[in-house]
Length: 186
Length: 101
Image 1 (cartoon, chains in turn brown, blue):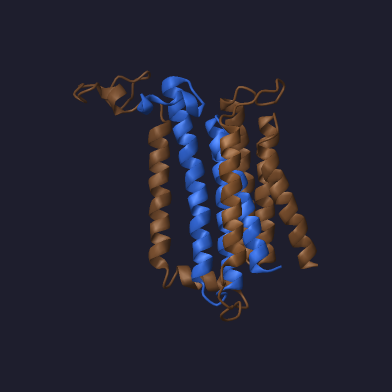
Image 2 (cartoon, chains in turn blue, orange):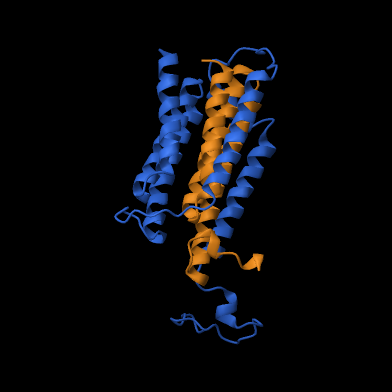
């Protein structure tokens, strides 16, 4: 049963992954990528990682919804009404990827993988939580800082007007020049 | 199901994503390729946990790190696209080549 599920999810993941770059319509490409990543989440459920599998599924669903919005915002051809290709160096990339896959597959098949050590815990989620809140606390804190830094960086990058726009190139303007003047005596 | 099959699937996803990241001109499509590559990495980490050292929770922590990297890549990528589009009205990698000149 698990083998059949693995095979189906694996085939669907790879096929929809390939279709991402073959569809003309950007919306279709986005949902194809969503399918592929949902299959990855499904494979993780098969591996016994219930919590991480569900997190992947939920995160990918939201992420692809946001990606679809950005697609429509930025792409010339969101609906795929005019077929067009926006690619470069397809042949070279195909060769590089073919070689990369052959090398990876050779490594996977030829490497002397160590024998399995230990048994999976009864509740992997509990195990993960105890690890993150115990010996791996530093990892968790670094991840938290990285997420926070990303929030700041994305806001700084995406904002339209920065401090140089408001206070001049030398930041010496006595008053900020805003399109709408602020209150509180400014 | 065994480790090799999972790792082969992960390498296939990684290479498909690599193809996309190398060929696509649109930055958003390029990011889709990166997402697929990271999906392969997540799957490889999860299968390594399951089939090599299931008793060690560090394998799961590695998956958490990879998932976080995916989220950060996505958010930063969209912010960069927005900034590029604001300043130059471009959404293709080939047009954002000022540093090359």
